[in-house]
Amino acid sequence: MGSRFPSHQLSNGLYVSGRPEQPKEKAPTMSSVAMPYTGGDIKRSGELGKMFDIPMDGSKSRKSGPLNNAPIRTGSFGGAVSHSGPIMQNAAARSAYVTSGNLSGAGMSTSASMKRTNSGPLNKHGEPVKKSSGPQSGGGTRQNSGPIPPVLPTTGLITSGPLNSSGAPRKVSGPLESLGSMKAHSAAIVHNPAVTTLSVDDEYSFKKNFPKPILWSVILIFVMGFIAGGFILGAVHNAILLIVVVILFGAVAALFTWNSCRGRKAIVGFISQYPDAELRTAKNGQFVKVSGVVTCGNVPLESSFQKVPRCVYTSTSLYEYRGWDSKAANAKHRRFTWGLRSTERHVVDFYISDFQSGLRALVKTGFGARVTPYVDDSVVIDVNPENKDMSPDFLRWLGKRNLSSDDRVMQLKEGYIKEGSTVSVMGVVHRNDNVLMIVPPPEPLTTGCQWAKCIFPASLEGIVLRCEDTSKIDVIPV
Image (cartoon, rainbow, N blue to C red):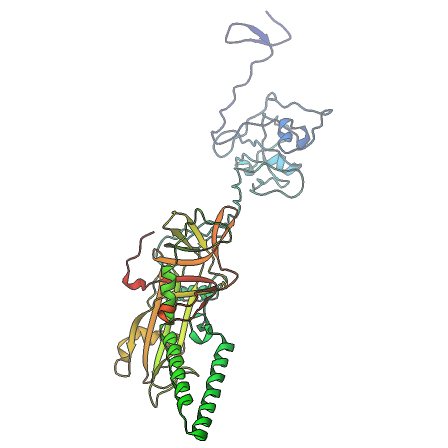
């Protein structure tokens, strides 16, 4: 049966008009789903244009499909070369790449540049467009590949160890830092605003605690008493007033000497006898004493000479003994006494876990806060002209600080509060957004007169730290 219209039989036995569809060569597995032929105009690409927020042109739509008698171009993998992204307007690009649907071979030649397979959009030069993870400038907003991790808000909590640029604790693997980097790290810690540097004025001194007007009044009274006693002794030859003045002067001088020598020990006893408070029931603004275990914040310290790591307080002091003809350690150094030549004391913010309630509080001792430490120092090394060369570490420590060691009797003391040590802290409770803190009190704390011990009252300014010699006490691992 002949007919002008060609027909063919399907696999199910039906006859349909039209020529049988040409078998297509299987596309390579690495190529993506073929997209309709756009003729170089992305506005005619249907759903593909919607992906890039480009308005469609509905009046001039083209349907892409297989064209008859079109040869199939193959790439380097032997399959059809295809692109699933939009193609920009460029004739050279269209001639060098084959889109979805087989094109007729009219006027088109095969080029060696067709041996590439891409699954993304092309730019106007026919090159793959690089994907970026940030917003694109110009045009609509593009979808990024993969979710962007959210930026975590700052919580204000102090963590142990250094932080990276995103605010998370930095993980370090491999060998430790070199000696040069450790020196730079130590210098950075000292000049860190989070580190409070304590001076000699922060130590206990009876002269500083005793009121100056009362001291000068006592001196004036005794001067007048000696003058009156001497005048009466010379006029009427009666020495009773002069003897009374001498006895009173001796008693007052002994009392002042007693307070100068035993004043610090009396204050330590006052701190020890002060009752501990429970942080769970402490009110905001209440002055409390808390005893517990120390935990470092994000700026741990290291002792100067012994290099003890993860400390919240460090103190290193160099003393010199001045004989009859030896040099003075400082301007106020008297003969036959020990004088302070150099001192380094630092303290930072730390956490304390209360023994009474188990709560954890942040102690604000860094950033230049007022702190009065009562931490016992231990003698690390005794040096005299005979054994000064026996400790190279000590000579190296002196050299870093430009201190001479020429025939001097020296003594190095060092104290520290290491992580895991038990300390007592006295300060004011402050609650801020459910964060429990201990801050310096606005007014100094007065110990009062201890009549049984013949001790005058003393003032304790700022946060009071009390810790025994940690070199003789086992710390609690935290």
